[in-house]
Image 1 (cartoon, rainbow, N blue to C red):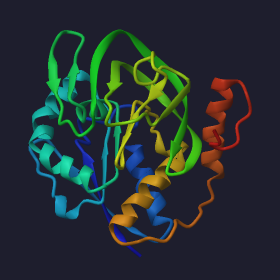
Image 2 (image 1 turned 135 degrees about the vertical axis):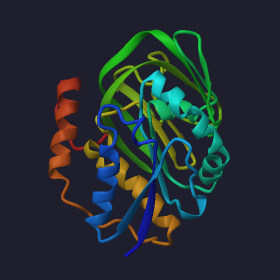
Image 3 (image 1 turned 45 degrees about the vertical axis):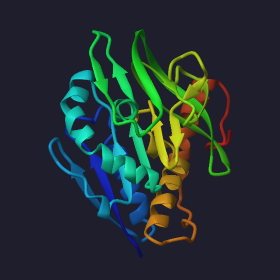
Length: 251
C-alpha cells in the first residue's frame, strides 16, 4: 500500500463544470486498489511543498477567477516547473491549462502572463466552442477515445515543445482549426474538457495514477476495476456525438 499526495490547485476559484469531480475520481480509484491519498490544497497566497507532491490537479474558471489566482500561481511557478521536469503527473483543465502556458490574452485586451510550464499561448476568440467532444488519444503506447464537454472562447496554439493530447473527432478542441485537443508534455496533461473528464475516461485516470505511483516507488501495474458504469457513460457520449456504437474508449 502506498500513500500518494495530490495537490489541488485553487479549488475555490478554479472549479467550473464539476472539475472537482476529477479529484474524487483519482482518490476513489486509488482507494479501491488499497492505496491511501492525501489531498492538499493550494489556495491563493499559499505555497506548494515540492517535497510532498506526487500528483497535481487544476481546474477551470472564468477570466476573473484566472486573474484572482494569477499572482499566486506565478509565485509557485518555479516549484511547478521543477515538478513537471521531474515527471510529476499533472492534469490541468481549461483555465489552469491556459495559465500553465506562456500567456493568455483576454477578449477585452488584458494579458495574463502564465508560468511557462507548457509551450503554448492562448488568445480569446470571437466565438465560443461549446458541446460534447470526442478525441482520439495516443498515450503511453495506448490508443483510446477521450470524451468531455468544452465551453471556451480561448484559442490555444501549441509550440514545438508539446504535442496535443489527441486528435479531435468531434468538437472544437484547442482552437477549432488545427484538429488538436489539449497538450501533453512530460507527464503534464492539459485539456479543455470538463464534465468532469476523469469519471468518464478511466483509462486516462489510471494513466495519471500509474505515473503517480511510480513516483512513490510502486512499479507494478494497476489492478483492474469494474468499469462497466464508466464504460456506459463514455460510450453513451460517443454514440450520441458520433452517431455510431462505441466500444469503451477504443480509438
